[in-house]
Length: 461
Image (cartoon, rainbow, N blue to C red):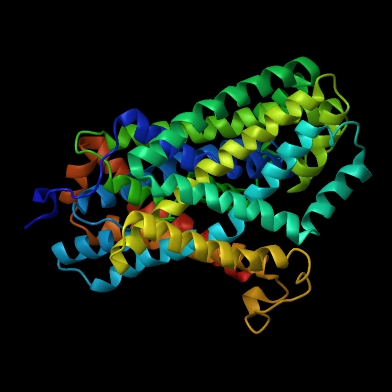
């Protein structure tokens, strides 16, 4: 029996809007509001933005479409592993293709071991902003606040526990009772906070300098590394090869237009990233701060700007709540494919699966916390050249972001573009003519070549 004739045993999204909110919520995370601005700042502003947009449209959109198609096509599957396995069986392909789904789940699991810790940073700074601890800070004080947070394992453990507990609580209530309700609150709150911050920055900051920086390209800044960074950012930001889009796709109704949805999600993801730039850089430029401050831009540079502005305490709290909302929606999305696989593999109820997954992530996440302080000089994988000199936290990030995500994306593109019958994918995407031919070219040739280059460069640097 072909996959399309089967009945979907999974829950379905309440509406297309809710599905889009959840997908955008997963995509819109710290990758947009924390990582995107500082990468733009380090790589020449508008020139990088243009390259990123090209990568998002030519590689991000086709891969998101493909992952949703895989999830929806595998009608009775509930995890990324079983989705690949079912489609492979139906089309008489090697059962080993299921390992691609397993790789995606492994990637998102390892990512969660660091992401819950970083989400804890945003909560800590939100509390600091409300309490006024970030008022009138200078560069030395701001750096000291961040360094002290990383050096305090008890405080980090408290926030890590809080984040994992919230994630378990929401996930245990299921698709409609938990995930949908959470994103229906967090996503509007995120957009409202972001708009407030852009308006505030335009009033008290140097918006002209920010507009010039973000929208006036300097093509002399574009190098081969620019393309690699942009593609890597697209993977990280949109959430490709993390099993989440496949899992969300398995809950998708037959009449939901995958192609339109993909463009909406990628556009919204990019739009939020750009808005974050317009919220952050006017403050940076107005205070003579450097836009290429790296990962410290949000946690070390911005508190200096907020701390010396009228109403800075209020808007600092708004900004860090924005970060909290973005991080939590991504935690919820990242958690779902892990829970789906655990339910399926061990025949557990959703509640038991969330407790097992959450407890495991909580326990192993403690190692990430300790590697920021007590174990910061401990490099357990020195015997592996790619991980030599890296802490546990850095190793987990490297394995997931530099190895598993690009490799999973590459294999997904090959599976969909070359191994599955194109008529099956065409039936899911519901496009034809030049639109389908363009998707086919992108997924068969452009995506594998680009991802392959990123993977090779990532493991040879």
